[in-house]
Amino acid sequence: MVTALHDRLAATATRPVREDASRWLGEAEAVAGDLAVGPLPDDEVVRTRLGHVEHLLSNVDGTEDEAADEHVASARAALADALAMLGDGDGGSDGDRAG
Image 1 (spheres, helix red, strand yellow):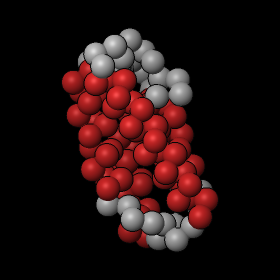
Image 2 (image 1 turned 90 degrees about the horizontal axis):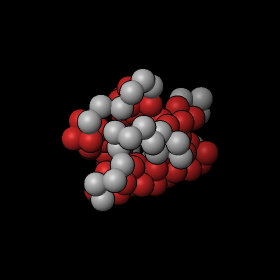
Image 3 (image 1 turned 45 degrees about the vertical axis):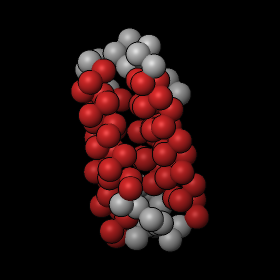
Image 4 (image 1 turned 60 degrees about the vertical axis):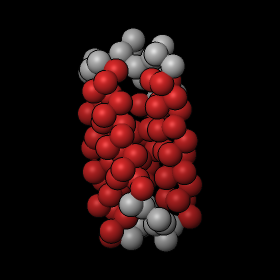
């Protein structure tokens, strides 16, 4: 799930988005990217980092680019899925990055 989140955020980097949105998206991509490579940390650390991504994305109201807005919507959906997986106590540190 974190790989899908990172991929959606990375896709916004190639789009002509507003400067303020670009800063928030870039930071969110960096945090998600840290989770997408190497072994996942424990669930609590993953939860904290995903919460940070959630906060960063909450500052993005729109990008002024339709394709980027679709990527942001997909990233938010992937984030919700990842948080839901962690919430049931059966995910996160077992290496589930696919999505």
